[in-house]
Length: 188
Image (cartoon, rainbow, N blue to C red; front, side):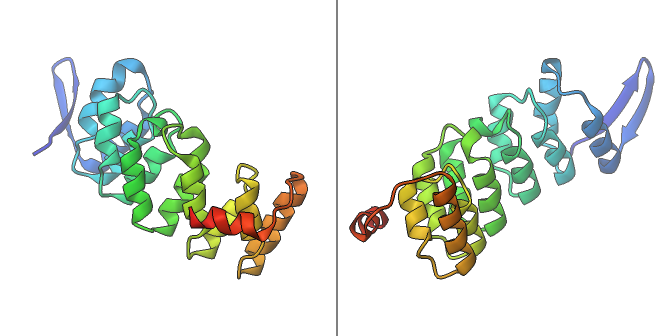
């Protein structure tokens, strides 16, 4: 059982999970706090782990531990943490993508450019053919999407996705492709 206690000289105060969450939120993200964050990443109350996941100066071990968390709010906080998200193991991101959870896919997509450990081309492709039109719309609006994917999305069944892809192509002056190039891309 985990026990959190505030100690000042000889005075002690036991802390409940809500109070500990508030304290973690206020803790400065300093290098010398990383050991405390390591311990707090194991705490059974998810809100505490969520607050830790958003902190900088997390050790690689803490990032790996939090990346295995079952709580979606913890995972979202970690993926949104620009200082830590590039250290999330690529195979764990693949597992999260495989869950097919639209909210998680959006969070991953929004942080994709910072997550340099990932094969972004493959992930863009997976998201461009996802069944959720909102996910495809995110890709269609992205200036980081390759022209081939945008041309594919310009033929999407959803009119908002089509329009967004065409607008992105036009805005960034991407070259036209013929349908054979598109078909070969989608078969990969």
